[in-house]
Image: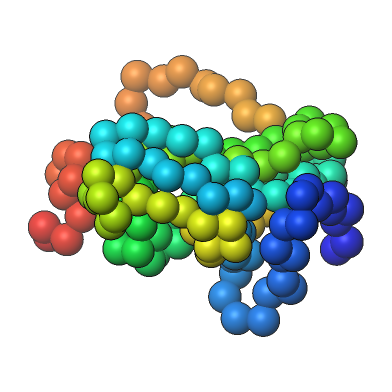
Length: 146
């Protein structure tokens, strides 16, 4: 599958996946995020996602350890209508732990997140019932208790 990509302001180029199923993304400017504050980190690219596909943006496993930040919306979803010439992807972050004085520096080119694309969920219709006639699993959070 080929996807059109536009880069902004000397952004780090995305690399073809050689290992794993996610594509790393990079900060496209230096940003200081104070502890207990948030920022929108520009990622330096826009994609023309194919109709019926969406991008899922998430932190890397090392993001918190390295910068003390979390992604504010846990997983960002970019749909196939966010395809304009200026629709640059961003990663919203929140600083929980200072890595520098009173916050953390994210530098241009830092590998702070990752994304993958997936087909959108098919159109579904709900059928209301009184019973499923299945065995109860044991309540929310009960995995592994049997």
